[in-house]
Image 1: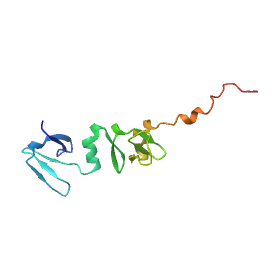
Image 2: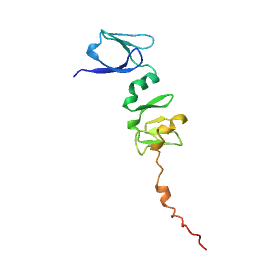
Image 3: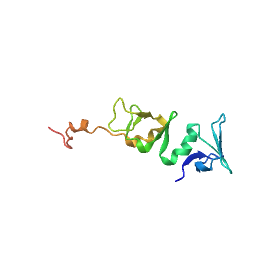
Length: 129
């Protein structure tokens, strides 16, 4: 099996390159450039470029400081605007922040604690005299 690496082509499109086809890797101020006999590729160095590369595998930008694999998100705390990778979460759980603009991407993961509602009886449809 041939090992492969995901890179971006000259136009910024994601592609997969066989490592055995690489003939040179040159460092630049914008990150390494990967050369084959026929083409040049580059490794993403910004979150926007990384999102182009990994979006099709489930990653989304939830805040300006992160990309999150939504396939691993288990819960969303709307008050703290954080996603967690385990349910239930604790103060030691790994999390990622969610900007106000991106809440819609994860709000379906917010779950209310049903236990706090069980203590209240269902209201009657009729008034008591």
